[in-house]
Length: 492
Image (cartoon, rainbow, N blue to C red; front, side):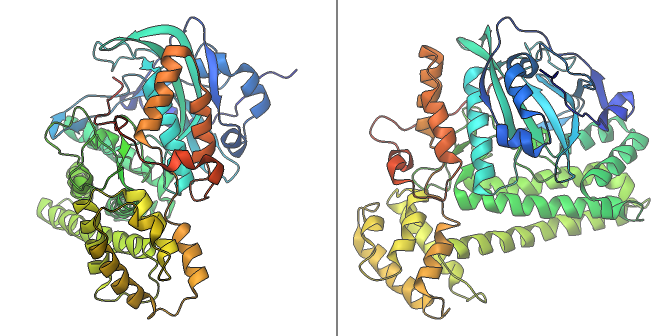
């Protein structure tokens, strides 16, 4: 039997001390591995068999593998609009980095690994429910085709954590292109440490945008690249009905990945003002506000980078403002493309295409129709007479039938065969999303009865969200009476 090993190559740990604090995970009492993502482990080039065998010890933090250099990253952040100059990893510990089979550098991080110097009197631990939620939703996001952090493993610790109630403790192991955030840049800008800011910028470019390395305007190039990635990501969030819930600048990754799945959730009935997060009392991060918050966060990154954009502050501000303004155009481009694809439109834009999209969304909102199933059912409604599934989602059929007539008339102008169009629509309109009520049911079963069968079933069905999976159709259904989840909660 060979020893477990990971070929670490820890570039962030080679940066100077102000970037992080070295800290070991805190051992837990009785770890048990409840989930291991073998395909991801293999894609990372890891020894999946030995990790599965020793996973409880490794992924709880009880056993540090050779080459690991555990650390907590330093960063700042705007939390619900209020700036906090030092946040940092309060319950996350970066074990190290690996180069995956595709040649890409990936972080491996424990979430819930124990207290760090940034814990701010917190326990540094994670509860089982948030770990299960992040595991399910992050892996579902990957299967849906969106950039995201990934879940490599989940462990129950055998120890309680204390929140509003006593809960089982757990640790999530997650994988990311990096854990660099807007808040990382804000941390050094707030300290007035221009040298560290320059080091961070060059590090970020080497990791995410190597074509910019050594160029005179590389800081501006990085800002543009981050803007493009976030515009594309948030447009995709809206296209699948996702609400992040806590888009603080410390949860805003410069890699363009979805990160920090705290009180996140997916829409059931379409409501652009929908908020799930229990801590978002003012609706700052409501579904429809996410594009504007993306722009706001980008402006905070631009502020942090100003000293590197140009020695003349007025020139730097003008350059930054141009990128921030262009973000709106880039978001609209990506959102329009995603929504046109969802209703099966191809070819050049038609002036009325987005009117069709917005009119359908208005119908869905007025009649509280399910977001996911409304779009999924459209592929069957291409031909007159195929709209029965769609009509079951609406109370008043007359305006829906009128919309379908306009939509079918528009489809004829593309000249795409109906079967081909239907296939394309089903490839972008999922049948399955991480339904909030199903996640809560899985968490309840695990917490009260140590029953992980629903958690495992959800992992399986959500790994193929665009397939019909008729034997698992119940997982596609919206919540029934008494099943709706009105609020989701942050795990801290």
